[in-house]
Length: 241
Image (cartoon, rainbow, N blue to C red):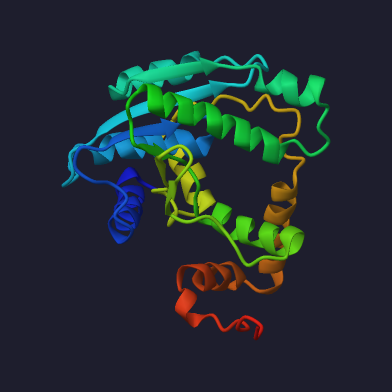
């Protein structure tokens, strides 16, 4: 995966869902993982030729688990992107105080709240997250299996409580392509210090999709198509009152 091909996919998603407008102030949620690092690099490259003029920022929520985010600060400086490191005690609260057995949902809400605070402080209006096509399908399966709902995240959504618009410009990219881009470009990665890393329901869904594809190689593309082309779906109507 080259920067040019990744930019092509990202630009198509940005255009299809009108994710970026003139005058936007966009904060990238930079966790240090491959996805958010790739997103920041791609948006920094995209702003050079984007038909819309926008400002770009990056923000990391330090969960208080001992990670070193210096490589991210250096990366942002090289990209000419202002960087914010927000120190929190999210990790100790979740693991030591509350002793959560399934911490992911609460952690996600707390980190999103911290990011929204940064967005407001920077007088920004959009928060960009590094979700890709694999996340899209895995979220759909999680909702179906654990919540009994056909549901997943949208490429663009407005959050009423915070007044922040979430955008996911990499939603057309596969995870393998993102990993290849980061590897080929030698983007910096900060190891995830979370104690639950790779031991989650999402990781189970990731492995389940891989298992299904061994028997049905085109299964992922069909599931993705069902999400991105809702006009094809044929579900039951609501019950009569």
